[in-house]
Image 1 (cartoon, rainbow, N blue to C red):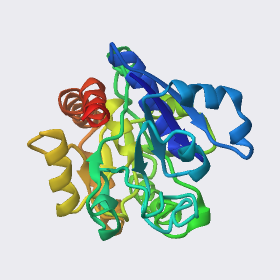
Image 2: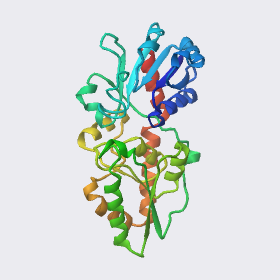
Image 3: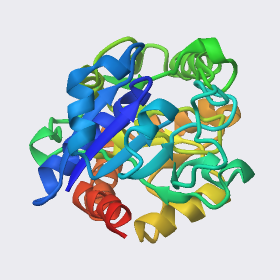
Image 4: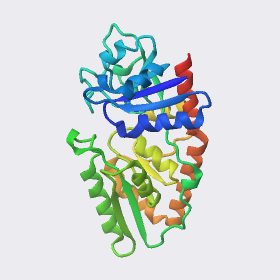
Amino acid sequence: MNVVHLSRTPVSGAPERLSRAINRYSNDTRSVYHVLADGCMNNASLLNDLHRADIIHWHNVFYDKLYNVTKNKKHVIQYHTEPGFSGVGHPQWSPPENIKIEKLVINHYHSALNYFKGCTRVRNVVDLQPSVYDNRDPRQDDVVISFTPSSAVFGVWQDKGIDKHKWCINRAACYFKNKIKIRLDIVTGTSWEASIRNKLNSDIVLDECITPSYHLSSLEGLACGKPTICWTDERVNKQLLEVSGADRVPFLGTYVGWLEDYLVDLIERGPLKLQQEGKLAREWFEKYWDPRDIVAEYIDIYTK
């Protein structure tokens, strides 16, 4: 079976990493990925891959012209963002009502929105092998916090409230004064590989604590074996446990309004406690977020 993934933007690298994971973990399915650009109808490589494809997997985009030349294929469309963000509402965001294809939605907070009612919930692949997992000795005199904000163009939560989070971290740093040095490492405008190296070199991974949801960065924090802070509500926790089969939520949860006190309490417990929390995070990830299981879930969707 041949699968072609299509998106208009990189979508935080999720479609490309899914494609790679399919090639790594599936014995009889081959996958390729294309970012669509102007003039794509003249892209010979793209058209050749579409001709060979059995499955066309759209990500946050749908082009009628490409659909019209591949009607004999199975099509699915996957949404990674909610209405009103990152191109949602764009004329090429979703197929017209007369075209019936299976719709998927990433199992984060927006999967429960009415807009995505009837969509199949799916998971993001994070494929970090144990050889990547960092087992260095814990730092004794400083704490590095890794934070990956989104673009600030979109407003309050879409930029992950960077100013609010920075204020909380600075306040926590003031509490410890000269006893412990707290360093905030903001990761933006870099490659995925570089952002992973940053998380591996940190002591705490901070995702945003405003939207009641985990994100791709949260999952990467778990995969890197780091205590990972975000804010999830009861609904998101329930969905996470359902799709993973886990019996507990792996994230350290707090709202941004309590982040300063939460960081102080966590850091005061000492470097060994941070390392223990990171070990629990990695154990949860290995047991409940195995990329082979997630690839198998996508293959089931393709073949049913």
